[in-house]
Image 1 (tube, rainbow, N blue to C red):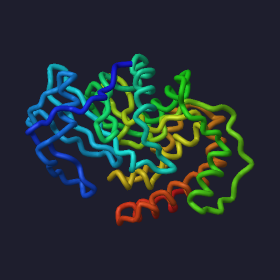
Image 2 (image 1 turned 120 degrees about the vertical axis):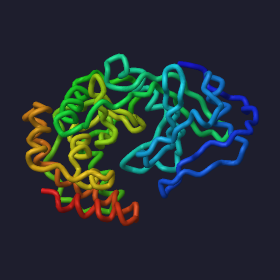
Image 3 (image 1 turned 45 degrees about the horizontal axis):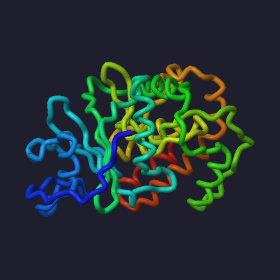
Image 4 (image 1 turned 90 degrees about the horizontal axis):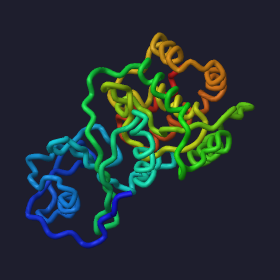
Length: 289
């Protein structure tokens, strides 16, 4: 593990854009500890080399020009939720374990800022094509077959469902359901987090766990999460393609039982975000068959 920055970074006179809740970019004051923390790893101080990346809802990311382009990810711990953790340590563990297996970008450096917030730098992956249900099914099947790295939380399937239902005050009609095995979960395999490069891999590993494979699948197939990120819901044909790529009839049978409960949980999460787009997404989730 690379050493973390502990001393107070020197002051910078350069401002960089940050990402706000309205998906607009604004500037910090001219003193910027983020640039200084990254500069210790050889990252450019020139803000013209820093391009904000759109898409993320929890953390701020930039693509930084260099001989080998990289992503700087700055974590906002306040954006964690009961459904989606936001843990830089878990992301570092996942990147370190899964990059050599071709399932995640290559981690480069990690550090922290004087305010205690975390940053991770990893190799930029340039998308080469559209990701559909087949690619997502292929990725999740590959991931769920991987031996998990040490240090991940254990989301026991049935207990996790009960915990989420209680948190979101749901009276779900729980099926007689026990996952047959615990697998390595991405935790947030929404469409924009799955990339097609020279292989299919994923980004945003801040909420991995051990648990029910149906948990990942419910999020990946979620109509509500698709709408929340600007995609149309998967059609019946696309869902069939997903299951053909995932190739596990036992998990499909389990998902048929527990899928409706996960849909209620996802809809409750979207409703709790209380904005117009997510209210529309929540309706899409509940209308999903």
